[in-house]
Image (tube, rainbow, N blue to C red; front, top):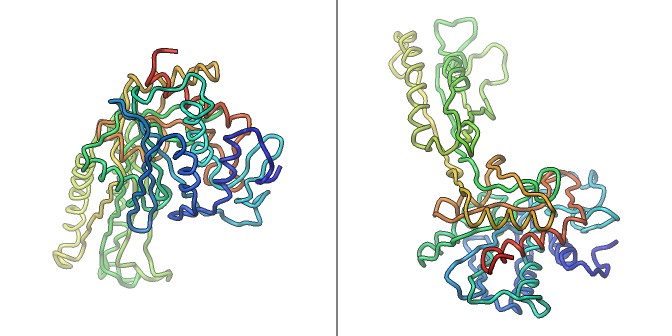
Amino acid sequence: MSANAATTNPVLELAQALIARQSNTPEDAGCQELMAQRLAPLGFSLEQMPFSDVQNLWAVWGSGPKLCVLAGHTDVVPTGPLEEWEHPPFSAHTDEQWLHGRGSADMKVSLAAMVVACENLFGPKAVNPLDPSAGRIAFLITSDEEGPAQHGTKAVMAELQSRKLIPDYCIVGEPSSSEKLGDVVRNGRRGSLNGELVIRGVQGHVAYPESVINPITSAMAALAELSATRWDEGNQYYPPTSFQISNINAGTGATNVVPGELSVVFNFRYCTEQTAESIQQKVQQILATHFDQQRSLHSTKGADALSYEVHWALSGEPFLTPIGPLTDAVTAAITQVTGNPPQLSTSGGTSDGRFIGPLGTQVVEVGPINATIHKLNERVALQDLEPLAAIYEHTLRHLFSEPQ
């Protein structure tokens, strides 16, 4: 089936149109306009919120006191080698089982399902339509989730804060499912703290150790302690905080030269037992202890012969949505649609929920199976498209209407 083939599946129709747009981050490539064309007839007020080179869409429906945001991104990661795809990544090809394409799972199918869910709730053919006075539903769509993530959701939330407009609930369409649609719902994420440790020694010939200070060997004990440290035990919602080294760079390429500098890039995925500040303090204590010892060994070579510095970058603070109205609503909806309640989880990487949850908003992530995200031949099962829209629809019904 081609991208232009007629279909009676409204989620598939819109998802194919979105996938066909080559919205390589931070490009939106007209995806938000396609969504806006479907939302405007439903009564959504539309507002473009561009920041820098990033397109953002803010659309609101309803007048009730509680606000639920449907959040997502139209940008996608690079395709990788085109010749290794079974079907062109932006062809939105379908076969008997799958919808193929870059961004299908992450996360254009979710966006299409969210739009269709709203059409089912209060479109012209809606059965038991939702009353606008029951609540407000908003779309926050960005094209900056897969990139630096500075001018998308983060910037929009700052603008909404300045308007004193903090959502009560937020459903992010990230691909949360593991084996079957709806089997996992993310009700939080760990924080992510990046660091780069730069150690400067004294470069020289390997045959004259008395004249050099090797930053590699000087760092070994400190890095071993950082790797072995048990930062915390986690808690009922989160696994223990983890420390991982991702890059180590040193050396001139020659076998007979001791390098003068070592760079170590590392990451903490931390739970709510920690803060970025507590981690930084502990790291500095460990480094200071070890490098004070190293400096004493090289005291004859000058006080500044061995030095180090750490550069920090906080990607996102941890956030958690405890059991409550939103988790109850999404659990009831998934159980209603699939017959099985989901598992609540805080595992995985970061998402734009990190810019929303810390403001006090209840946030969950619900979307398709994530097995192929960011991979060659990304795809979503056709049988999951309409059930995903139903999950979003029933979640909103449980939030904003009498129990179903």
